[in-house]
Image (cartoon, rainbow, N blue to C red):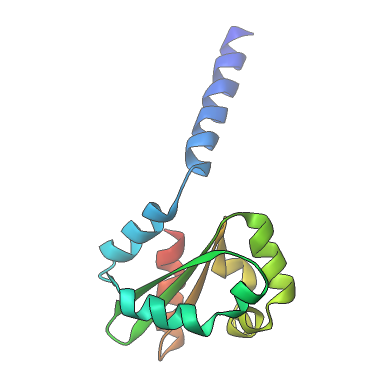
Length: 130
């Protein structure tokens, strides 16, 4: 019985560690893949997504550039705000319309891939989920 308890406890510990992730993990993934953080792109995208402010939802916009690819990561304060935006923010919905929505979401983060090719877009999505 003690053996099963230890196995269950170990599994719970592993699941807890795998569930704990934050923006730093995403940033590290993009940097390791050769992207650079762009404050200028973040500012531009932030101004384009002013609809969040109108809805009273606080977000932080991060942008990573690599050649002609841009990965825009939208960080919400919580998953509830993310879900509300997916229901009410028409600009966000239109930016995500060409993709499987689930591929673009990770906890309280959304990635918007901007690339010339579908392969480039998929590379951004894969990097986001690594």
